[in-house]
Structures are given as C-alpha cells and as structure tokens.
Image: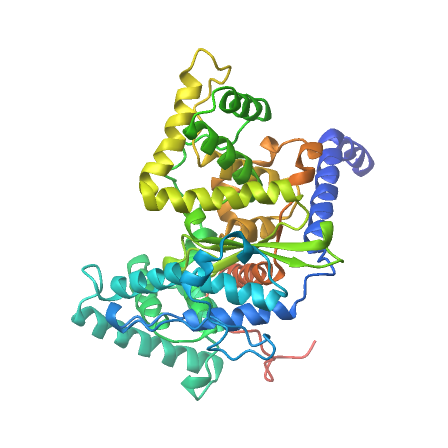
Length: 467
C-alpha cells in the first residue's frame, strides 16, 4: 500500500513541480544579479551620504524652528563642511556643467546642495504636521508620554536593561510590534501613535528606522485597497512604439515633452513629482561602463510618515549610453522649468491629456488610455524581471518590498530582455541594505508573533527532570 501511495504521489502534477523548479532558478538568478556590486561602487561612499543625510533629522518643534541642514560628506578631502555647501544659485546657474564632478564625495555634496530647497520643504512640512491642526492636543501628548513611559518600563523588564538611554530603538520597535497579538486593536493603535510621536523627536538614525518600521507594519498585513488600482499598470511595447511615433509624426510642444518623458521614465521609474527634485551627477571612471559613473539622486516624494526608504535614493545609470542619460537629464530640466512657468499640476495634466488625445485619435492605433504614472509601473515591471524584490523596492523608493509586489506592474508585463539592454538601472548598495535590515526585522516579528507575541526566549529550567 505504501509503495502504491508513493507512486501516486510522485506522479501528481509533474508539470507544476517542474515549473516550480524553473521559477526557483529564475529567482536565484535575479538574486545573484542584484547582489553583484560593480567594482566602481565604493561602499565607503554610502557612509558618506548617511553622514550628510543625518543632518536632515528634522526638528519637529515648530516650522520656524527648523534648522538649515548642512549637506556635506566626511569623505570629502581637504574641504571643510562649510565650504562643501553649494549655494542653490550656483548650481542653477552652472547649467549642464554641474553634471560633471571629480569624485563621488563631490557628487554627494553638490547634489544634496542642489536638493536643499526640497529637503528644507520636507523639514518644514514635517514640522507643521507636528504642530498644525492635525497635531495631537496637549492632553493627548500627555497621554502619549504616559503610554510611552509605561512601554519603555515594560521593555526594560523584558530585556533586562537598566538604563533607558542605551535602548536599541529598532529592537524596541520589533518587541512592541509583537505585542499586537496580546493587545486589543484600539489599544495597540493608541500605543503605536504614542511611540511614533515619541520616536520622531529623537535625533538618531536608530529612532528614525524604528519609526519607519512602526509605519511599515501595515505592509506586513493583508493587501490594502489602493485608490490608484484603476490605473493602467503597464505600457505594451507596441503601444509605446505607437505613442512615440505619433508624437514624432505630429511634433507639437506637448507631444515632444510626452515622448521625452516616456523615454526617460520607463528607464528610471520616478513618481512624476520627483522630477522636480532630482539631480544627475557624472564621475569619470575607467572601470565603469562607457568610462564614467552616472548617478541619479532622487528626493523621495513619500518620505513623510516613514513611507519611503529614507529622504533620498540613488539610481546607478552607468550602464546606459550617453544618449539615454541626455534624455533623462532633459526631462528633469523640462519638468523643473515647466513647473516654474505653468505649475507642476498643469505640466502633469498636459502629459495625461496628450495620452488621452492619442488614445482617442483616429490617426493613432493606440486604444488604451495610459497615464503618466503608467511609465513608472512599466519600469517596476521591467525591474521585476531583472532583480529580486528588495532591489526593486530600493529602485522604487519603497519602505518594504511588498508595496511593489501588491500595487505595481507585474513581471509578466516586462518588456523583452533584448529591449532592456540600454535601460539597465541599478540600486545603490546603501538603499538595498536599509531595506534588507527592515525585511529581517519583519521576519523576526512574524516569528515572534507566531510564537506567542511577548513570550520570552526559551530558557533552561534547572528544576525540569532530565531526559
């Protein structure tokens, strides 16, 4: 009987088993490709950018009290912090020459200097949220302080720590999240709000990471409805060709901008608003493709409330040829200029309206009503065919890999590999490592919640009978 059962089991759906093995091989190949770091990427640079961004731990007291961030890298040789700050006017007036720098340290300093106005706006908006109409009342803040003090005392008892100043806030956040199975939902939400308010006022990287982890817990839960679910989350290659052909055939200013935007954004996958706060820097390097490194600095649009992977993300464009990088640069420059002339909303609406006109035009073979955001979805779909989920999240600026998995273009819509040769973009190692740490925290949380929430680690009971 057992032998017959084994034969039946071994013959069950061999096609599915073979497909599963093939899927594992593909995922393994993507993982190896994502982990491969080129020789020209110096890991020390990412400690430099972390040092520069550590100055952007926002003062949340009042909008008027926001301090001006100092953008500099400790790796910049022979340059004092004050000298390394590039005034915004200098960057804007230097034109395309500001693209070219001598080292990654100079790239970090100059790019963050150019992004300074947007980073300051982020700081001011964050401060207003803490003190505006939606901010907690004084009575609520007192309750938050009471809840936080109680939780810290419980964690000290649980972990054996005597000094609250030495708390590892990331481990503390993990411990708190595991309590979700022990507390009523309303109580847990109140405690989470209290802890978030408390952590946001601690000027440390660990506290910022812990706050981000508390916000990203929703990403660990079931799928959520997304207001953007009705968007077309891909652009078919044949339709992309038709749209570009139509724009070239009828070269109005709007059509030319649309063609440039689509050519750029299927490569870099930015949120449209992120074009207003992005910078390209090119560094001569014989070890890099085409004899130069090319990095895109992007100010994450959804950094508020811990919804992005830090204030800034970096995309490595070095594998693209000069023509592709020129298209991306021109699109960024055009978006900034149009935003100043007619406003960001009108610029974005003009792109969407142009796509609608092409879909309705009898002179066009395109029938699907794509949007400007469809290009970002297509970029994410292409990345899913090239990289593992953590690398995709780093490229998209997401706090957790599940965002792209649940809400963005699927790998089945990825363009053919031969078409992606001049579209390869890599995440920087620093962005990947931040998400990896967050994913590891999520796994520990799931394991602890499965094991009974606050249950302490198993310890040897000296009174237990020996085996």
